Length: 152
Image (cartoon, rainbow, N blue to C red; front, side, top):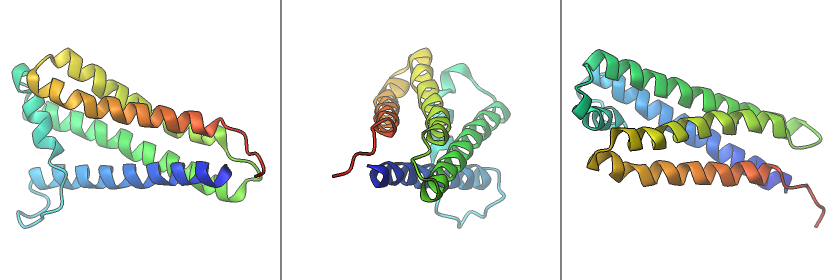
């Protein structure tokens, strides 16, 4: 069970690392820091502008919000990497370390899900199932961390 738990934590560490890097590339490209020839970016900043268009969110506020999201993604990635590294060394799976990582990630997707409801637009509603699915997957991962390590 311990290897499966470590594998799940490793998956989320990789996932949040890639997501935060592609989102960072996206905003850096949008701000003109990365050249126009840069092709690897998430496109999520444009999505954020579309979702918040009914509120007429200024560009600076949208960029600040996007940086906040990226910061939480980086924090989640770092916490998942820490839990994975501890799982290699510790005699028992480091459930408390994993808890922090899952809490950060679940908080992000819970905020996304509630945010889509608050925006109450067709565009927001179309993205809500994705965020809710991520939240469910993270919840399942968190529950998996609680299973005891039984010899086969």
